[in-house]
Length: 454
Ligand code: F0G
Image 1 (cartoon, rainbow, N blue to C red):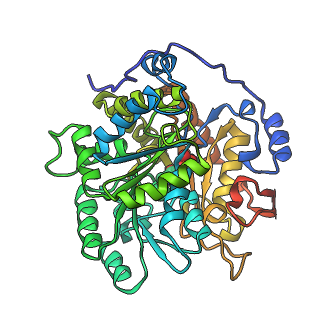
Image 2 (image 1 turned 45 degrees about the horizontal axis):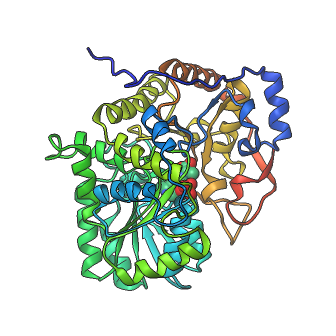
């Protein structure tokens, strides 16, 4: 049979609330035209993020009952540590409350002002943490990665020539590869690219770090798209990905299949691991819980195994592609091909009448909410376009709207509904107006900016 079904039955449900268009107009105005400031109860289908928003399995919930809440040496930690070690092969595993804590600790120990950090594409918090240390965050995706409509199997790849040039000329304490490349369409990175980047880094004696929030989705793309991997298991592919790296930061709220959690893992640099552990204890908690409850560690230990099941990954990647195909059929421009955890609409192409200084992607997130109660997120001028020289002219290369899929949470009819909302919004797109900033903080402005229609 050709239908790829959800490989689970639903055991617990959470009601969602219908609202009228008029209500949503009012609610959005109250939320200062920023979907981050809406109450979740006022959202019908919440595709803001796939981070911590998924459903857990019965095995995870039952594991949580075993959670050992001992301050030091809890058995839950050892299960978590074993799960991470099995996948990464790394010696040192430091639990953290989420991905940005791992970034803060690692970058705090390794970066100083004037340093340069190349990444295929930084995620927003990752970029912010690099800059917070006075270092410069450089995005070096392959040129194909910058063209939303272009089809390429591994658009998340890093530009290796650019990497080598940076390593020759700049002060680079570490290189990061983000798998999958979230800010660039959730696009995968090939094994060949990771391996070659690793060879280059090691020639210059620079460690390679994986930002591995979506490592399992990346492994699946390698399996189905890269020569030589079709007969390998997702676990074997993931193990090979980590083999080329010297460390990893993970937001386990994604492919950890849990609502909270993360880790910093270091291959064999004992000195760095000790330094990071000291900061972990100072700021997150003792090294066997790192700001998490014992039951969170249990949920993660199970989730890190479940995420590598083939039937899950096949369904996961297929369900995202399904929405991508529907939108493409009706002429809505999206980043092609569909990524692993989300569909990214190319708002610049869809709303050419809105200039970039009126934030077309942001405007589209507002329209999706007002018309259909769907919450999405902007990846464009607000999230990435900070231009210190001229704040009125954001300089983000792309204006994208991300529809992120929480794991194991929405069914096909929810997604059919989302595509209907998009057809409708597409049919009235000429009436969508741009927005302007009323008030915004300097760091990570999108989370709390107050906006208004122009
Ligand atoms: N790295 C990547 C690639 C991410 O996507 C995220 C978070 C982080 C690091 C930070 O992890 O949130 O656990 O502190 N991404 C979420 C998103 C928030 O919506 O894409 P965190």
